[in-house]
Length: 113
Length: 113
Image (tube, rainbow over the protein chains, first blue to last red):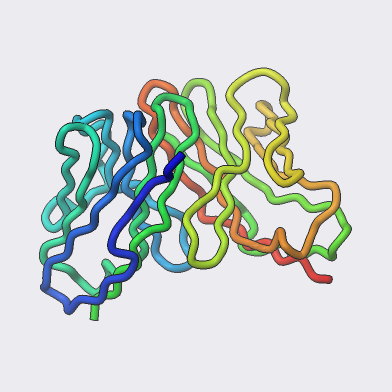
């Protein structure tokens, strides 16, 4: 069974530029999560989708971050404009929903210079 | 509110000794608890979960965790540590009605030969 796919693996951009990350969840998984993991910290939930609807985006900095999950499958997370403090690993995860465990992709390491 | 605390930044044990990584949680309603492990430059890997039933949960790689409702704890344990167990461990709490998954700050486990 294929796992959660993320791209790119690494990205370096200058501050004030924009960047987008892509995630393809495990087939059949209705729930999709985006987490931000800053070095030395635990993953922070940015947004959670159930199919193509948003369940929780309370921690998403909406002035610069946006995310979508068209057709309830793939998802993209965008940052525009990026700030230095956005440097982190962005993790995508998916699950069948409810109380089932989430499966994580390898993440995208973003460096903002 | 939903939160997780991992009180130890790092746990050091000698190979062959038992290990414990601590986790306490706060959530309204029934808790759904998870442990994940993260190796360098990798995504999070699911180890085990508690949903209901027996308070002692067994998971991957010989790990187990004990759910204690009165102490709101879910400590990760292993009877005999291996050097290869050295990694970053995360406890997480979920909510059944939303599937929202919140992570602790993580505990680095260092197993020395």
